[in-house]
Length: 254
Length: 308
Image (tube, rainbow over all chains, first blue to last red; front, side, top):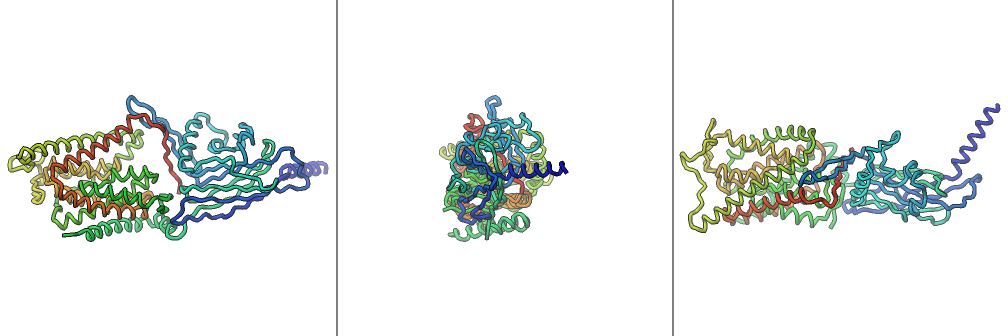
């Protein structure tokens, strides 16, 4: 009986703590369509912080960190080093199961929101999110120079990025942010995670997702290339020869 | 004007791509080479992922080569017998090359091997072509036409052997063996280096086999049509990396450019042709060499293998 009561109290206490604040998220759309004129876009995300009766008044205001991760794949970062007079690829690091698109949005500098130690543990921030998942990580494999290079190279195509002014509170409990989608954003499923913090402590997490897909002719082409490669290849070759023949007819003067 | 490419998964400027492919098509029609060794780096430079660039320029080369090969065929500037031998030998060589490619990749440093052999090949062939062209020009100025054609008894020993064949159109009398061997080694190089090999085949046919320039161009283009059509199919089957929209843009530009190139080539004297081809090959060799020697501003590079 006592044991049951203690258990009940523990459950109430725990849910009380964990459920002090909850996040409610809403994306403008769950499907970003790519048409032939797609040159990138923006996706609005709205959210509300719900507080229940037990939520204590907080001295610090809320902070937000939004992360968006695109379809995963393997990335290999190579480094050129001098070999005599030649510059040759020497070292390389393989990043497996790494998002092809990664964006972090926040309402202010991450260093003001959370301590570096906690950020690493909670996987908040660009380089922390690139630490391989699992039981800890091999420091040897996780060479920060290669992680920085990956972020820099992907950043050129605006596929990796951090915007510490992207999120804004409209009211103390209501926020919005714009997720910038680069024109080169890969097709597939995107996971959105929002972490609510106050005074450097994560209070609540909520996830949602959207997908980037092609429609119409682009969709049919992509599908044909993957599902019937023989006819797709044969059609490309036939098209090449046909146009080659046509050009030769059109330009025939003699 | 931007167009979204469904396989490359990126938008591209239509006018830029058309201009680029017309330029490459012109050069390919002028010299009778495929032009893949120019198109692929240009595409990668424009931001197209490397596998898509390699696969799609194969489709483009198929188009520009078939355009020039057809006009050469109409003017009887193709030696079909020679072309068949080149295609046969080339296919065997490509198969060996694919095996070699995978072996080299397991050993590592494939990139370095590729770049160095590229520079060596382009540099050697370019220098030889340039010297030959310069010699021809000087000879022409002196009035003594540079004679390349061989007469009876002038044939070197390596041209003799089993299966002696006459190629009346190419004015060639030669054993099938060295031709097959030569085509096979270009096939090997092509598969390992990811090129069609037109830029090696043209000078070799000119200087080793002493085939007339116009026949060389037509015959090489016919061989390229077959090699590159096969390459397009292989790329489409193995990694679905052929972007048909990008190919369509490249083909249109390339086919038009190749026609202008072929026309300009017809007016060009054989000596100037060699000189220009030599310069082009040397320029590409130097470009690769500079990249290898100059300390890079960004030493890191990224290779993506997105799982489907």
